[in-house]
Length: 437
Ligand code: AMP
Image: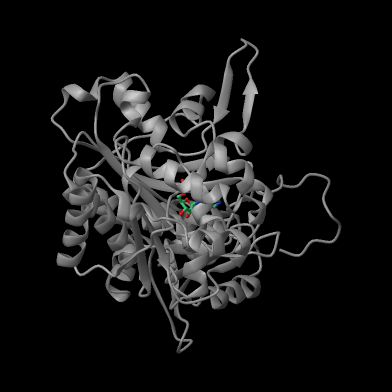
């Protein structure tokens, strides 16, 4: 929209309005996600936007970027520390425990769709308020569930008409084998610490696995020769991962094993994955000039989370996708969501009585589910016909003062310019036939 002067109030950095012409993308994505969720029998869950800040520091992990740098955290008047939710899995796990869902038949399958908040450095594909949808399967340890979550996300993107999808997978082990691997990795990294970026020098102590997916080329070249966790998995993790890959093979999904994929959240165990739309522009340069690919979705297994949050030891697996990223990728590929039904009829009116009749008539068209455009604020026929042209309607109904008194109305074929008169009472029925609804 044209603007002359910079307005006094604007959206905050990293936040954005979703204007009417963008809503169709959201509806389209919601509709397709919901249809897959319904088919696979996931129940929709909506958790509050604000939670106890501890839920995330404990669940997501104190040493993660999300908790350390990106949480919108504040103290309420009552003195509680609360946070705008930065992600959806910890709240869903909290709800599972709080509502005693372990007593339901397992696994419990939940999905969500809503806004999330991270105080990120603003850059392409990264917002401070962004939307995600996510799927969680809680209470099942079998690797088939990992494969099913990957399959579900893959097919959502397929339904959204993405052709060029790529899945990256890895296993990051569990409580048994990860500590041993971490020690190996830390020893290796310590011998190279002077060549790491400042952030990663700090990460050696706090979160060494994250160094493997640092975007700084200095760290990437050190990570390239680091020991790989895939070669140090315990037997259980190894067998689990092998089975996941076998399922992916059976499903013919285009996956690639990425030994550097670790994900940014502490709660993950074993399988982790990300989905990309491959070709392109999806490569984003961040503020320091490092090129990274923006994932459309990411997730994995989180067998320790429910217990960590005070529930029973419960295996689980899930993933989330970023709606803004999906929309940007759709636009880049010129994938257009279906627009709301376009009107095929325009109703023009002249005079006070006609205006009154028009209000009633429009409602009759709505009841008959026939989309009709009008401009009751306009009085000139010329202006209304111009609008009808702009809508590209096939017919314009003209209700003049005289017609309104006689219970009649004109039907004008916009292609031929031909007009005929009919009764107001029967016009909805006639139009229904003419536009073949
Ligand atoms: P995560 O919760 O970090 O595993 O992210 C899951 C997905 O959410 C990512 O693959 C992105 O598509 C999306 N996402 C995460 N952070 C942001 C952000 N700051 N802005 C936009 N999308 C995001």
